[in-house]
Length: 155
Image (cartoon, rainbow, N blue to C red; front, top):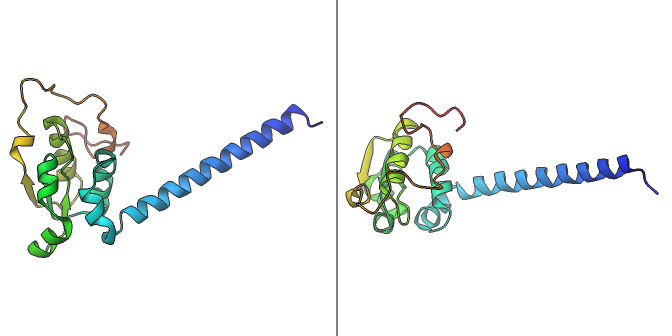
């Protein structure tokens, strides 16, 4: 029969191996997702866009980006807009985008790269009386700057 310390070492070793595998898969998936040939699907897809769009935007460093809600997301195709403008484009609009998160995405994008042209879906930036001034559950930690504009060292 094995001693409790051996069991503990085995459990800790397996836990470390599982964590290393998960980190490796996650990193590989991010590089696959961030590849330019996958951007058409990625930028117009609904799902984890609030999490991955700030990271992909920072990685691609586009010159032109659109911000807003789903109607802005659906109106601008990544490949067609890039070809039409002849400049790197990013569709940063998110499904059901609220004014707070749209402002924060724009603030972060302007602070973190070479963005020189912005297309705004203004209706997505107007706060309606029934909406709060901030978004519960919105992860500001993914963005380049804090709401006050100061750099986010944890980014």
